[in-house]
Length: 470
Image (cartoon, rainbow, N blue to C red; front, side, top):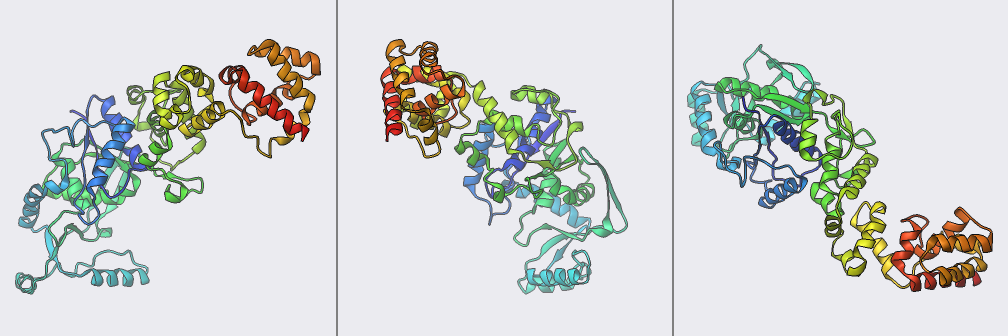
């Protein structure tokens, strides 16, 4: 049996980390088993779907490195891969269900349904459809149709049945049909809702394994009923634990912008996100920064956690820095972007990269260092003024003289200053660092002064002297 997985987003917004993780896990599982990963666009809700989001989600997935073998741009034997183009397929299945008298027309208005739900909740009852339209006779149905009423079609859930399956993540699952109300499988406008077309398409596209968020777990018994009624094969379902923030609530916009497009704009690297997500709610048994093939090799469904996966920015930043360090010089230069590239002279490009690489997580960091090294002067803020003041005038006099004598040989400069001033350690390094960069952190001083050059070093030491002398 060929393993076939899928990712089936609705194009109603940008892909966020939760969607991306489901797509990644599905792609890794297919890759691990030499299978096929399918991208299917679930765009039957015309009022909410947007073609621009279809383009965006494809770009985001390709950027992340999640590539589909079948789907948009990669035609296979079971297309089309847009649900809006599969209505004729759904119509044939509707006909089968209607002939078997498993579905029936429902003329209840949205207002009527809302009132019924409100009443059930007030009585502490689980809100579900009461089945009021199920007993309608052929004559009553014909009369309503003659009035111009357009019905939705509901699936008649059989009574007293148990729906049992083994979830790939959560283990054995048991549902009772009596707890499930008759659900809509065809909207009044003739289109197929998620519950129906999602299940039918999985069977029609020969999907063997479905990995999706646990928020879909309650949908699964309904979809099993549909597949059973149509005599279609059920895939193996695995429901992934949700990603939650530090407050324990499901990750959302209030925790920050975690769409792939937003993270890409911020400068996150795809390999960083991929490595982080591969370990989020999954016990990856390999350390270090891995490529997609390696992540697939170490992906195990049995190591998917049943507990909520807690988002950890510290861990994400760890992988981001690891990914930055793994970039070669040319890739890192492209990632830094035009704003940095225009600040750094071509002759100093390699030296700049070598100097600041370990001190960057995002292009914005690179731009900060580019500004520090390219401008004649450096800004020393009020927080760092005391460091300059405490060093004293003589410190910077001796520093400038040492540079005059030894140039960019930092070891010699420091030796001269230690001998003339009797200072060493932090009291020697920190005032120099602040005077030259305006920061109390950053690259090695030897690289800093080499990148600045003698004239800029002396100019900044002179400025520090003036600050002390004020």
